[in-house]
Length: 298
Length: 298
Image (cartoon, rainbow over all chains, first blue to last red):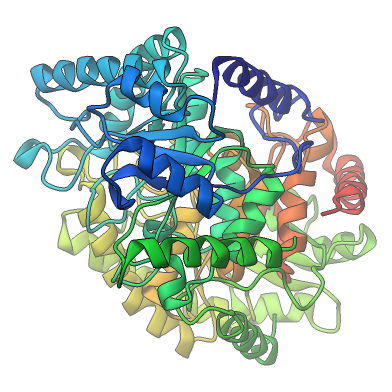
């Protein structure tokens, strides 16, 4: 996503909010999206076999991919050189740092300042956003915050990060995880309500089909609730194996219906293990996902 | 709801779960419902002017209502006498007792045993369910539980209440409230995931359009997430006034789309203030809601 499309996307989000019929429901997303959703497949960079980023980008193009997800230590010059003149964009930066919502103020500052540095690099390469987890299990130790105070603190920190993100032409993306991995933020509707309360174009969220299988009762409902705040999706199979989507015939169609309903425009990126050779399995899984996308009718 | 339709409704819920395409997604509700949703309007009994329950029931019939919501102190014989031979059913019992999720075991027992007594009366009159709030703000005092432990405790207590509810041919209905009223359970998706984890036909949930306006980013997404677990809805205007739905032109159509999508079969009941005479305003608000229901197209 380049800077122009970032601004367009922010304006589109604002238009969605403004277009609601009721004067009472200014925070409600509109019913259905104006622009049809697009399937833009991506993979985390370290899951693509290859000796260089350029070689990985070339494989992605061959497989029909549209995006590449990078780690937080990226070198913007190298990344731009590898994707220049290709159809591949940086889908997201996966930076599960933090924890953010802890009692320890020094740790809060450390996490926020680190996020700002990653946002700068992410903005330079036109990434959709920088993924963050507010707190994994264990974070905060026996001083773990209660939910209402954790939420208040998170919103304060996100306001600061959101301001920085806007300047960097990027976004922070909240990632809900399942209860086995994080004590806070399990559901997409909860992440969306945080985004709404922060109210910054520099703050968005994502969904991960693997975690959603544990925590959501409806993938479609979850994505509709995520609505205009959703700017990234992680793909993995939905069994405990967390392998390639096609390798255990996981069903994504209910979620894809939700993505189609909201007119999703951003990327879906592989974050999963693989049984066998990724050079063989990745194109198979892309084909499987395209098939599921076609079958997802509202 | 009579006993036969309760059983039918439970079987319908089971069929929804079983009908999912993916072997991985056994807990996902199916895409769309088989039976079209119905609009069955109800009012809390104390909001209908009248000298007797019989007189209130007659007014409801005149206004096109289908259900009446009662308080926890109901006398089953009197209620059955008032609705016998009429099209009016008991939509729900509004019993916001508890708190349930507190550190104090005596209070836990007190709340659960009280709920069981109400379930018995509710079952006798064929109520859809008994409404419960796990904990209001302030409940638990400075020993307030953290969310993960509160959830675990709630699920244990709901399993016990669910078993009793099934015997009583009734249900407990979790009610999410906005953050200004309760420190736990703000969103419908969260309540639905609790119902799923409890996995009892004696445990369901509800949504309240007033609270949803504060806590949900999408009414439609929230109701789709609630899915098969949703068995009651509260109606009020969506401004702070919490008045009659038509009195501030609140918009229910996005939520009604969600209810239509899931094939909602239960009641929507007024729980709100009123500007002016309820005898004049209630039929106006029923007409307004019917109009909104017609306008809600998926």
